[in-house]
Image (spheres, rainbow, N blue to C red):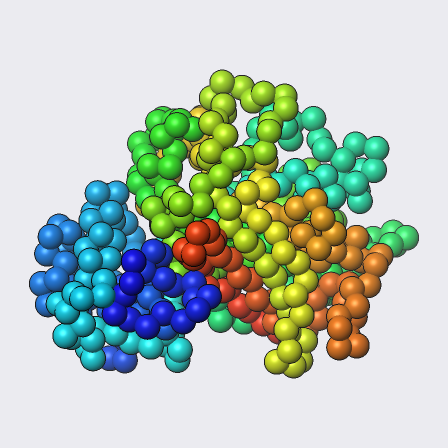
Length: 416
């Protein structure tokens, strides 16, 4: 398919993608937008021209601070909206093109907003490579705990500190236990880390008591984002026994502003890793329940020069999204439109595919030598972390853009 909009080579936002987000209009009003090429389609303006009438989406859902109301209209409306937009953007169709001066806004220079109102957030731990690596550091004789291959492990996180790309993060403070010390100390984390993750947005609300099956799970997923789960490893290490992550995680997570729909990812469907032992019945899954999405992390250290730290792929995850949602709801847990469910760190088998500084520096024991004379074991103040993701096949590219955030020094207050 060719569009009348110029789409640069290697652009994530092709006519095959059309991801949804929320942007700040020059009037100061938040609006729903769709990305194509280097532009945002103003969906409120497009709807006001009557060009979206056949989608059955009320015009007011596109003049919203969040996508929740649009998502709640259901999959048939999402699908019709993408189909109508695709038709309007095709070369030779002038219905939208005639209004491009009012409908299109450049992505560059436009403020993107958090695209969804997140009620609840859950973070899984679904990469066997990541879980094994972390286990080897802390439990060399028993890297994977006995339950890991039988269920997708997760914890309920904090939605209040999930922020959109471009929002700076302050180094957190908390309790840590120095090596050979007899009691903990309080202060800024000295082991700040990123975690390379994706997350999916729940697209349909369930009733309490209803379990979503693996087979029907994708019907409940609106789309996916990139997700940086910031982690304070020293705070995490001291607190995580017996109840798991808390202050080492809940201070910040960053997401990309554009939600890529599962429809756009369909051409990149691929096979999941083999699961042994076979999961219990409610977790049994067909093999083609994942997607071939390239993922990468770079950092900038007080300079505009980027250094790539790792390259991984979404398809490495041992537990797929459908299994995650099935396990999440098997006890009757209610899910709501806009809930965010993250994958956990996505690491591969190769040394350059490890999705966290914890793994790349092997617990801080090995310094990463960046190619312009800088070394890192963990992140330092003013480092900027950039995550990108894209799928590409047969000349078709569907990407996520990026999630980018800078780590700022801790905010020190007297009462601490």
